[in-house]
Every structure is written in structure tokens, then in C-alpha cells.
Image (cartoon, rainbow over the protein chains, first blue to last red):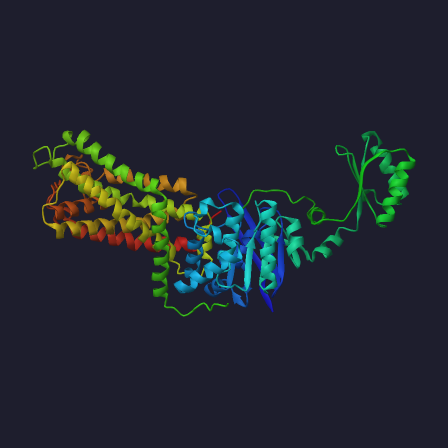
Length: 325
Length: 278
């Protein structure tokens, strides 16, 4: 059974100056116990999708069900079943960690003593016991985010929505949070995760839906998406910019590249990129060709496509930073 | 360990319980923001001193000669103004919660829809009761007294708190409607200045231009002030002493409070249902 299913979700925001179609017919289908990564730049509609699925926004059209319950008609039931943790670490800054978790526990209708016990458990799990009695103003960004996530796990949700869980975190905190998310996955929790970090989706998600301008433009596993961009590529940085054009011509003929569009040349970084159908044997060929022509190589490498390449190929633009909606 | 979340709770019990938890939260925050308490009391104290000693001597109270008459007259006005300014605490508090994403979090929980606002209102009410206590002490120091016994004075304080309760719902609606806490602070207060000054709070209405007199005497703030003056036994001059506001100040104050709550509480809860930060 699908833990999360959405069909044709549309949501339009009418502003004073313009109308923004934040969701333009999104379909989603997340099987139980899996992680879906919703990948896209700021303003692509990821957060709006999460808000609809967690009952915070009513869609203008389309339907969505979480664990079989309609998010509009059975909103209250859905709220009791899911956990939401957002990019803004929505916790009370003037309460202590323990008080925050106790409060959320009570609001999930746990009796006071159970809420207390659950708070202790979560503080321990998230390595926050030492900081439990400090008010949140004194927490670091990573600690707040952990507490926020702990708050969303109070009622043992079977479905968890994580809206850009690591945006703005330092690398160490990000790794910590990834581990926490993996632990939830191993407990069988279904997760919908939004991210603009392609690496994050690659790392955590079973399948990925790439979102741009409010609709899904591609879906599949990380490997499937990467294969859309084609195989491996070779990047060469030459020592002398004057050699660039000659080097590209030599490599194009040596590797038998028919389509000049498949290659690229960046003047400022003195970099040439060419497809490498033969993998490492092509690498040898490139080195031999350039060496024979007396062109000095500053750097060379075989590069596997990243999800950044996927994004670029699919949308024609990079996963750039836009104003958040 | 697995915890079963109890699902069957009556909606009313749930609303009360959620409001209680959120009120607990508001109260926990008060001692942790001492600057807010200081500013909330300094402003009315400043008003007492300015009006009592700067304007007071220039404003005679019709029918009540003597230098202390104005201060007797003034305090009910200050009390009502202080309670009216409760609007700002609710509007800033909720706008702040919204900008920090807390409203989104609360809305994603299986809570009563009224819980967040009701909790805020109750918490702020306790805060305002404390501020009023300080105002009463301040009044005693400048020479204000009640003359009809403690029971009637208590009734006056109850009306003042009821008024604060009503105004907090107005503040809640404003806080959930504006963009952020900074806007909420001015949006919550700006209209209150003309409202309190166009009343009987600081200047006896007989001294106002005749066109403004009926407006000032029917003003909800005036009705609260007149009810308090009546119950405290303080001077309470009226331009039209036979009119309804002069004859039935307590009833009019209760009617106004009920009307404000009846209009703004549902509007605030409705706004909350669709409120979302960012």
C-alpha cells in the first residue's frame, strides 16, 4: 500500500502583483517504508507540497491521501498519524528542550507522565540530555534542528515529512541528522524528504522526484536519473589557455566524438569536458593524445554524473537559488 | 516502547486541555523575558505621572473641585487604557509564533483549532492582571482611592480583565493577519491612541467639542472607564447625564465586551485555520 499518494495537486497563490502556481498538478506515490526525495530548487513547490500533505494548506485541485486518509476530509486523523519537521526549526525559543518536548507530547494527547517519559527517551536518542534544561536560545543550529525532529517523532508517526531538514547546517550536523533519518528508516518509517541538496537525495532517498515550477519533471532512483544524463565524462584542465581549442579538436577526433554538442569548453577555468564511453581506457587515450601533441595537462579526471548534471539536463538551468515562495 | 495515542476525547475537553497547555507555555515565557514586563509597566506608569502632574492641573473636573479630583478621575482611564493595550501583547506574540514557524507546527498537530489563540489569550490575561496590580499600587501612591468598598472595587477589576480578554481576541486577529512581529506591534497599537484619547479616559467629555461628545460617550473604552469610576466611587462627569452610557455604565461595558468577543473570537479562530508563516 502507498503510504503517501497524491494525484493532480494544484495550489495557486494570488499575490497583489502576480499569481504563482506553486503546484501545477503534482502526482506522488510513496510506498510504505520507503524514502522519497523531493528534489528541486527554492520556489519549485516542494514546501507547498509538504504543506498540503500535512494538512496545513488546502489544495485548489487534486487529492492526497496519507495512510489511506484524505488530507482534506480527514485532516484531523492525518495530523495524528504524521510528523512534520521543517526547515525553520519550529520550537519555542524560550522553553527548555525538555519543556518543548513535553508540550508537544501533551498536544499529541499523551497524558502528562507519558509525555514526560517520551521526552526523556527522545532527548537521550538525540543526544540532547545534557542540554535538556537549557532554553533553546542557547542551542546551536544543529541542536535546534535535532530537537525539532524529536518533536515530530513524539507520537511514533508512521509517516514523516522532512522539509529541507539540513538546510543551513554545518557539515557535521548534517551527517548527524542523516544518521538520525536513516535510523528512522530502519524502523520502517515512511519518509518524504524535500531537499535542494542533490547529494542529500542521493544519500537518503530510495527514489527521487525532481520538481520544477510546481510539477514533477522526472522520477526514478538516483542511478536511473544519472543514466539519463549519459555515461561517464572526462574533465581535462590544460596548463596553457592557448592550447584549449587545439586540445578539444584533437580529443574530438581521437575519441571519435560525432556530436560536438556533447563536449564543452570553459575558457576561464581552462577546462574541457568530453564524453568517455570507454571509461578508463578513454582516459588513457586522452593522456596519450595530449602528450603526443605537447599539451601540458594541469589536471585530469574521470567524472561520474551527479544529480546536479541531471538537473541541468532536465531543466536546462542549474538548481539555482530563487526567492522562496 | 509504543504509546497509544488516545483518540476519543470530547472536543470541548480537548479545547480546554490544549488551551491550558498553551497558557502554561505563555506563563513559562514571562519570567524569561523580563524586559517585556518592564516595558509593559513603565508605559502606564509614565502616563500616570504625566497626566497626574503635567496635564492634571490644567484639566478641571466639572462638579469636583480640588487638586486631587483629577487623579481620582484619571486612574480608571489609565486602567482601561492599559487593558486595551493588551491587544499588542497578543498580536506581537502570535505574529512572532507565525514568523518562527511555530504556528505551522501547532497546526500540524491534532490540536483543537482554538487552542493556540485561547492559550495565548489566557496567558496574556494573567500577565495583564499582574500589570494591573502594579498600576493599582501606582494609583495609591498618587492619591487615588476607591470609596464604595472592596467588593465593588473587585467588580471593577473583573470588568477591566474582561475587557482585556475581549481586546486580546482583537490582538489575536491582528497578529495572525499581519506579516511579522514588527508590523504587529504598530498595527496592534496605532488605532488605539485615537480610540483612547477620544474617550472619557483622560479628559472629561463635557470639555470636548459637542460634535465629539456622543462619540466619546458611546466609545467602548469610555463605557469601561465609566463603569469603573461608578464602582470605585470616583468622579464620572458626563456631557449628557441622562443618556444610556451615563445611566447604565456597567451594563454598557458588559455589552461592549460581549460584542467584541462575539465578533473577534470567531474571526481570529477562522484566521488561524488558514494562517501560515513564510
